[in-house]
Image (cartoon, rainbow, N blue to C red):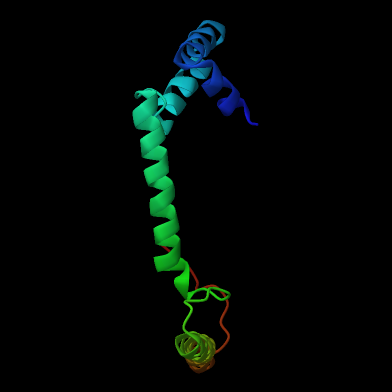
Length: 136
């Protein structure tokens, strides 16, 4: 059991006492505890906080099914759809890899063209040292 759960078992007065002790010891500690209490919802009524956390867990599981459903290892229960999804994901990953390779070759070609242009301009001018300063 973690520390927050142990303090939750003691109740809201324990959190308030901990926050006050934190402010007395070193004010950033108290401020950090206060921020944690507000962020985690522990400053609301316990009944609301419990309901809120249950709703948050339901939302996470739903979002996991919606957003994480495209991940490997997740089964929708429909074998034909799962096979189609796996094939589509494999094809998209292959296209992504090919596209990245294409972009790399394109960058290399552009760099080579710029370098060749630089070398041809330098060759026309000849290898010169620093330009002489005009005498005043």
